[in-house]
Image 1 (cartoon, helix red, strand yellow):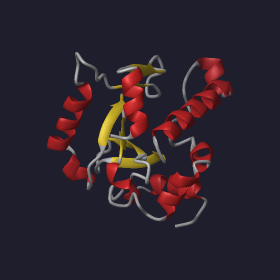
Image 2 (cartoon, one colour):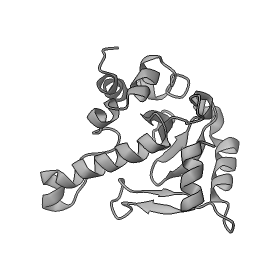
Image 3 (cartoon, helix red, strand yellow):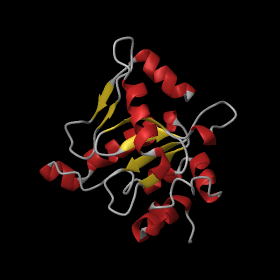
Image 4 (tube, one colour):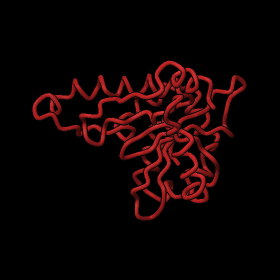
Length: 180
């Protein structure tokens, strides 16, 4: 397990982030001495979804979308990149890299929430028209290691279905600051 994620579980075991916002909030799957949610959800992913992904991930939370670490892309300190997995696409799972490690994920997600609540549309009607990670390209682009991994095509095996989408390719280009 990613060492930062292990630390989060050691301190909290379970958390809810902006869950009152439909499609925005997410839940850190419960895993403590009473409930082994992390083990259970990852067993389901191993049994039902990993073959669709192309390589193993460790799902640690989500709501509409799942958030997972990618152990095979861990750095020398064991920190693992984070991806968002959208299981609702008709033409396959969409995987989008969102952070170089769990700490950067929490940082980027919190910065996204700050931008969201400052958005005039959100302030006026409470609707989230800015979506993570789609409308967080500037925030994600600040994560130099993430951009480096994306430019090196380290997520290609996970993104094979995603990259068939023109929207995902444009998003990828914006985060990386390049043209494919």
